[in-house]
Length: 340
Image 1 (cartoon, rainbow, N blue to C red):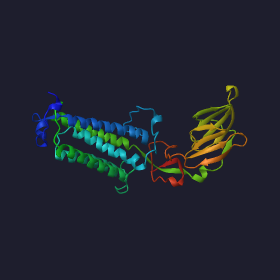
Image 2 (cartoon, rainbow, N blue to C red):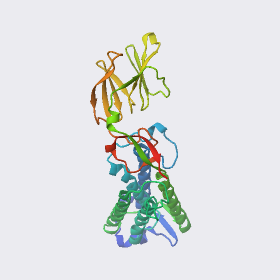
Image 3 (cartoon, rainbow, N blue to C red):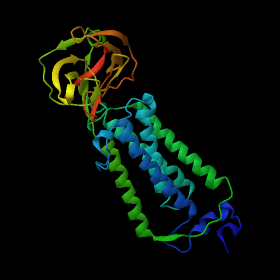
Image 4 (cartoon, rainbow, N blue to C red):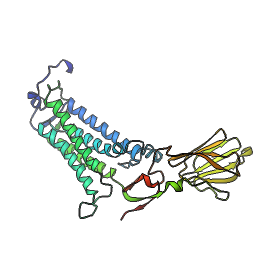
């Protein structure tokens, strides 16, 4: 007989259905799916942290460091910084509920436990304890609200699915003894704490800005500066352009593929460049520059597209630096000062 042909079981008999004998937990389809969904949520949260926050919470180093934070500041601030708390509580709640018998008490207590754990972790990053910050990181009330919202979401979802509707047709898949159940649950708790601590591996710092008037000052051309750290290369006709990350562009005469140094264009925050219709287009933090290079003795900006690119507060500083009281109106971040 197939599972689909089994009769629907009323929720009144749900608990007796999933327990075959005292001291054993029958891992049914609903519990199995709960664990799978919870694991998927945590995996999604892990890669979210890598791409949108520039942090590897578990320090697995499974991806190149160039992947870290490639989409930083591409999402709204609330989503980028609070969604991980929601995912963390949701994922661990799903997995934990998959390891216990469903009761109204468990459905309420387990999500609440993870929400309280996340809230406590946030509070330990604040200055509420006589002005002393116990854990490194940045306190964010939105993370607490996201954790609470996640707990409510999970509790309401399970209450609606398990206690308000007819129970699904179930077939036991696996049996865990009481000892195995406790060991699995404790392992999930430990894993959740490790993730929590890894996600908060920050160093608090005050941002150091380059003001917008300074950023938008006239170009500085240097015919003596030599390259140190080279970035992107770009060839066009007899010119070879080489970027130095966040510093500017070196120009070389590339006749006969024999590069000869010409000069350096100082462009703060430059990462990329392209020549089109005789003009050099280059980024400068949030701005896009259109530079006339037709006369190499008279290089100048013909147009500046202000705020053309998204503001990236970590373009010039490590990803694990948590900037305190970031104010984008003061300019672009070029450095930081670690807080005591």
